[in-house]
Structures are given as structure tokens and as C-alpha cells.
Image 1 (cartoon, one colour):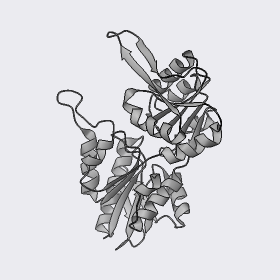
Image 2 (cartoon, rainbow, N blue to C red):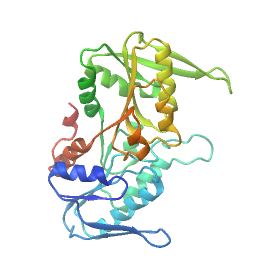
Image 3 (cartoon, rainbow, N blue to C red):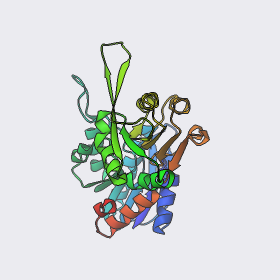
Image 4 (cartoon, rainbow, N blue to C red):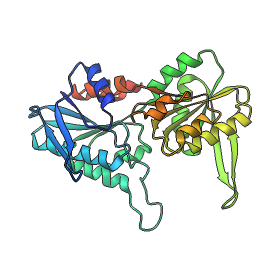
Length: 310
């Protein structure tokens, strides 16, 4: 087994390698003068089971191209099996036609990864479960729930909790966490009465006087999360915290979180934290290295990955 890191999230790749007790495979990944990507694998990979760690986060196109060229280099180096380990799968939100003459970019990216040489994909909390069907190769979609549950139990033991989905689309994710915590579930229902009017927010469930934990998969602009936190605070919640798998945090998202009622926003390291995020007082990061490392070990040993979540 070999673990190879591209450039998007090298600290996570190093932590995964440390968990597995292996050294990262030596590779040269650089740019030509015109910024074309060049990859050279500096170790023999013939007949090896190779795992390439690369989140396709910002800059998404550069990181995606790095991944594709690396996969091609491994394929041409006669690796026995190549697994693309993509902790954060970019383009996942473009999973359907949103209007006439618009693309389904998630399917296009899935085709590119397969054509480049990946024979398996390992990822965390896909934006929509049906994205697994976009690939013609096996996809292991891990859940960040075990990482979150461990931290929630450490910080909120003995408190009256209610798990909250910030929108209707995330109900299944929040319900799974609530069931494991034996906590109640609430939902933030958002709607607009007319175009240009402010949002009317309704809270479905009892949150007054209770510790609320918002659960979501992606925080990009953080608008949905902050609006939900404000609505919960106005509904009488004792405290509002949030757990989000992928911290994209584009634009002024970090400042928006700092000015919101959120006391703690916990994200994973599927996307490497920026300096601005590290300096934030109410945003914390949890490592997914043990989760990904154990999944990689089980894939290499041909044992069950799904039993990680039983």
C-alpha cells in the first residue's frame, strides 16, 4: 500500500500516513511557466495499491487538474489499483440541471476522474447521496458523524440537547445524529413570501431553553447557518452551536460566523483551514485522519468499510 499526497491538503495526507504507519510516496508535483501541471512519481508503484489524497477545494480547478494528472501518472506507472481519496468533493452541488442549457458538472467531474485512472473513490459526506451513482467505479462515502459524536459527547454530556437541521434538505443527516445521541430533532423551515421580500423563518420543534446543535455538510457563505442560528436564538434557545463537515468559508464567511449567535462552529479538516479561520475564536477543527486512515486500511485489506458506522 502506498499513500501519495497532492498539494491541496498535505497536512491531512501526512496525518493519514502517520495513522497507517507508512511514509508518503515521493512525488514531484509542480507547474510549468504557463502554469500547466506536471507530475512525476519518484518511487516504483508497479503492482501497488495506491491512495491519492486530494481535496478539490479552492482553487478547485487547479486541485482537480492536479488530481487528474497524478491519476494518469500512476496508471501509466502500472499501479495495481488506484483509489482517489477526495475528502471534499468539489462540484458536488452541481448535481442536476437548474435551468435550460445548464450542465451537470458533478457527473462530468466523475467521468474525468474515472477516465484519468481511478478505480475507486473514497470521500466524506457527499452533498447528495445519489452522487455515488454518477461514478461507474465503486465509491465509499464516509460519514463525519462518528467524529462529531465523539466531540459532542465530550462537550455536552448531561445537557438537554436538540439537534437541528438548518434546512429541509439536511433532515436525514441531522436525524441520524439525533438518534445516536438520543436527542430531539428540530428543523429550520425557510421560505420567501414573494420575490425581494425578507425570509420568513419557522422553527419546527421545541428549542426554548435547550442547547441547540446545528448539523450541516457544507458551510460556504455561512448565510444559511448564521440565519438559522439567529432564528434559534430568537426562539429562546439556551445556546447554539454547529457541526459542519466541509468548511469552504468563501468571502466574508468567517467574519459572518464571528458576528452570529453561534458559540462554537466545529468543522473537519477535509478542507485545510486558512489563517483567518485558525485565528477565529469560535471556529474549531476536528481531524478526519483516523477515519480516513482506517477506511484506507480496510480497503487495502479487502475488509468491510461500512462496519465503521455500525
